[in-house]
Image 1: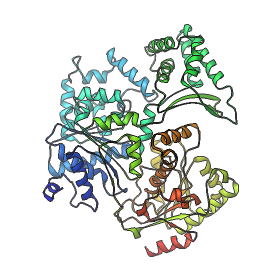
Image 2: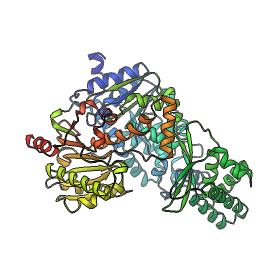
Image 3: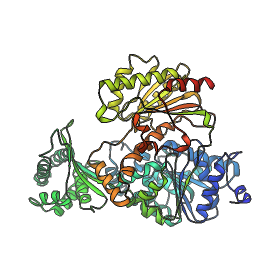
Image 4: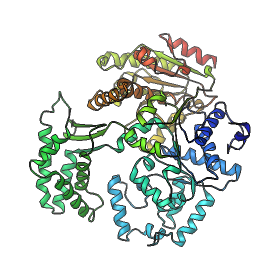
Length: 625
C-alpha cells in the first residue's frame, strides 16, 4: 500500500499506532484483490478501527456492503462508536444499521419465547393485523408509512446509532424497531449484526430480500472469530428430551388434541427403551439414525408423525405463543439429515431425571464455507486466533492470507509465568490438591498489589478451591455465579473496580461471564491467574469431534481438544493488558502448562517463564514498576 493510498484511508484518530499501519495495508490489499484474510492480533491494538477504516474507504463509491459480525453487544457499541468518529472527522454521508435478533428488538412481551416460536408468533400477529408496531411502520404494500419515513430520515441524521438507541427512538411513535432497522439497512454501507444474521441462511435470505443486498457484494468481517466454530456448530444442532415430550403431552391434553397423545406417549417409550442401559456408570451412548427411526416406525410411520406434529403445532400456536408439539416435529425432521459431520448422542441427566437426544454438528464448515466462498471477501479476526491454520481448515477457507501480528506493547509491562506447583488434572483432584491450589493462589494474591482475577475450568472446581481459600485470603473475594444477568455482572465489575486500591479477588470460570468481553484497563486489574487447563469433558461428543478432525485433517487431538482449551486460557489472560500503559502479571497455574504438548501452543511473544520461585519474581516485577 503506497503512502498516497494510506492517506486516503478514513482513519478517525490523529495517530496510527504501531502495527495498525501494517494491518490497514494488509486489509486494503486483501479487499482490493478479493482475497480472504485470517488475522490474529493482540487485544488492545485497535483491530476494529484498523479493519473498518480501510474497508469503508474501499466501498464508499461501490455497490458493496460491509457486514461487521460479532457475538457480543459490547462489540456492537465499539463498532458504532468507531463509525461515528469516522463520520464526524471526514463529514462523510454514509448510513449504518446496527441489528440484533428480531426477538430482542421486539416491543411486544416475547422474552419467554424461544427463537422458533417467536418467529411463528411474530408472523401470526403480522398476518392477522394484530401488531400495532408493524401496522404503524409498514403499509399493506410493504412500503413504509409516512410516519416511518419521517422517523427514518431522523435516524439517518442522528446515526450511526447503537441498536438500544434505535429501539428507544421507536417506542414513543410505536414503530417496529426491526422494520425500521431493515429500512435503514437498505442503503447502509455498514451493517453491524450477530453471526446468525449471515450464517443462518433463513435469516440471511430474509434480510437480503428486504434490503436488496447480495452475499457476492458483501465484505464479511467476523469479530472475535474464535467463537465462530462453536456458534456455527450450534446452528445445525438439534435436541429433544423427555422434559419436552412431557410438556407436549400436557399441551395436547390442554387443547384436546387427544389423537396425538398416544403418539407422544409412544415416543416417550422409545426414549425409555433407548436409554434403558444408561445408569450411573454410563451416562451417554451413541444412537444410530435408523435405530431411532425404526423404533418409531414399529408403531407409527415416521414421516406421518412429522406432518401431524407440524400441523397440530400450528393449531396450538393460534391459541398461544409457543408449542412443544411443534418443536418435536422440527427435531424429528432434523434427525433425518446427513450423518457425515454429525454425532447422535443420548444422554442421561441424573440431576433432573431427564433423557436428552442430541443431533450434534461436528463440522462448522458445513455452514461457514459457503458464506466464505460466495462473499466478496471474508475477514476473520481475534486476539486468540492461533494457530491460524486450524481456523483455515475447520471453517473452510480458500484463497486466504494468514496474518499473525506480534504484541506491540512493552514486554517489560507484563510478567508471564507458568507455575508448575499444582494441577487440576482429573485423576489428581482431591481435598489435598484443592488445599494446595488455594495456598499457591493466596501466595500470588499477597504479592500482587491490587485486583486479581482467577479463572477456573469449572464452577465445581472453583468452589472446592474457594472453601480452602476463604479462611486464608485477606482480600475481599467476589464470586461469579452461573447465568448472571447483565445487571448482576455489572454490579460485580463495579464492586471489583471500586476495590482497586485495597485489592480484591474475582473468582471466575474460564467459559463464564468474565472470561472474555470485559475491559479492566489501568489499575483495575493487576493480575490474572489461569488455574488449570479448561479442557472439555472427554465425553462422547468430544471423542467424536477428535475422531472427525483426525480423519479429516490428521489433527484430531489438537483441533478437538488441546487448541480450544488454550484459546480459552489466552482469552482469560487477555483481560490483563489492554493498552500500552497497562502493567500486570499473567500466571498459568498447572504443571501441564510446562509440558511440551501444551507449552508449544502458547504464543512465543508472550515469553512465558516456568518458575517455582514465583513469589520472588512477582514481587520484583511490581517493585520495579
